[in-house]
Amino acid sequence: MNYYSPLINRFEHYYSCNGHRNFNGNIVSQIRQDKNGKIWIGTDDKGLSLFDPQTGQFEPSALCGKVTYHNVQAILCNDDYLWVGLYNKGINRIDLKTGRVKNYVSRPGDSTGIDDSNIFAITRLSTGELLFATPIGVNVYNAAEDNFTRIPQLVNVFVKSMLEDYLGNLWFATNNEGVWCRTKSGQWCRYVNNPADAGSLSYNAVNYIYEDRKNRLWFCTDGGGVCLWNHRDKTFRTIDENRGLPNNVVYAIVDDLNGHLWVSTNKGLAAISEEDWTVRTYNSSQRIQNVLYNYNAVLRDRDNYLYFGGVNGFVRFDPREITPNDFTPAVKITAVSVLNRDIPVSEDGDKRFVLKRNQSTFRFDFVLLSYVSPPDNLYAYKLEGFDRDWTTVQGYPHAHYMNIPSGKYRFRVRAANSDGVWNDRSAEVEIVVRRPFFSSVAMLVLYTALLLAGIWFWVRRFRSRVKARSEKKFLEDKINFFTNIAHEIRTPLSLITAPLENIIKSGDGTVQTRDNLHVIERNSNRLLELVN
Image (cartoon, rainbow, N blue to C red; front, side):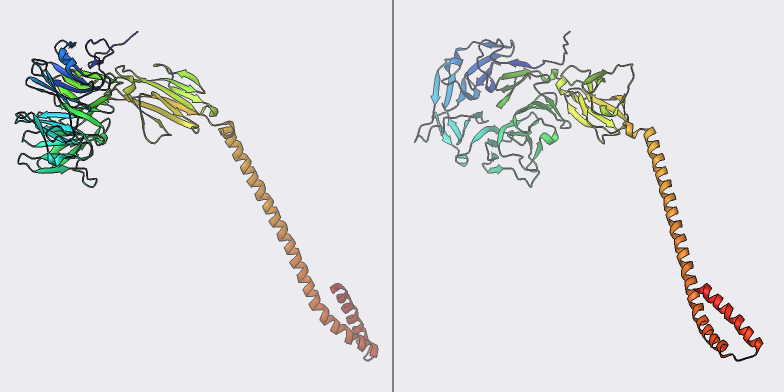
């Protein structure tokens, strides 16, 4: 089954290989509309082609073959003449009535000719004068004398785009020297990037200058986004990647009638809202064919269709038909992949998955039910209990997790369609990663019991050792005490027994006295034996 959305392919893509007769070029460099409403397409590789916007077809024209070189860089439709700037081959002036061609090229020593044969921009002033920009300056065409005058202030300046604003000031975008301005009064000033000044020009390489319907000046830079000129305070307001642009290399800009400015960048088209300066991107994977855009190749025709040229043709569209995709589709989790085995997640089935410890590496697959441009769908997911913040990805409906710790988690995913419209309702599943056996509840109880038993055994053993040590010390103290007492008693006894023996041996005293002395002697000897 194939799905077709009315939001897709509202951009018409024209290129030489898709069956468009009379259009052989691919690298579109210029798009200009003449007074008859026909559109001239200049290319780098195949010269000129003539496009009829009413029929959407290319017309055969003998005038296309009048161009003297295939590499066209600039076009100007001026009354009955078609001016064509060529790469390294000067200027072709083609008479639209007669088909006659006059070629202007640079010649050494000719001060009245063009200063270089590489023509990158042509513009007409309100005075009727024509300006031709080259890598080394700007040439003013003198119709009366059919020659050129150089602007001295711009000698050796590579000018890529020129414009006369509604005040009569002339603006010149340069390759690497910022922007030059010649006021209506004839004063010259220059604007360049100053990193210390946020109000300065964002980048010195400027590709294109444009004045919109509100007379605002826009400068497309080659690396700093697009800048809006504030005439009152002489400052620039920059819209770049930080403000939503898909890329800071901007090739061209044009406004529509619906309040948007369209810019071509290195990464697709972008529409800037004049109301709040928000940016919406249209790239090759969304609703526009794969076009790599080119410098200055832009046009809003009389019917307000917009054209953007690139290295593989050009696109045309009606900006009124480009409406945002406001549909907020649902997001679904389709599967949980564990060890390379997908487990489907049904809408009405169990949304709780219990995994073993060796299954802690898994993947979630999800999908947004929006098929306008799936590669541009946005997803934001989070594993609650593990992730601190939401992770946002584009076009990749998968989330991988590795070595998740044991525990309970909730996986949530939200999504936005290709136009950035978010659905606040998330899809959810619960994940439980079991503990390994050695850290299960039973094992934790066993570990606790063993720990308590060990502590009890250690305390008991410690107490036994303390008790034995105390008893031993008590015994030693007791022995020492009695040893000291015995020593203290032995000395007086020795002093008693020695004189007693001498008295008994002398035979002095009465019988009763000698009997008492013998009693004393026996008890002294007895006591001395006990002490010893």
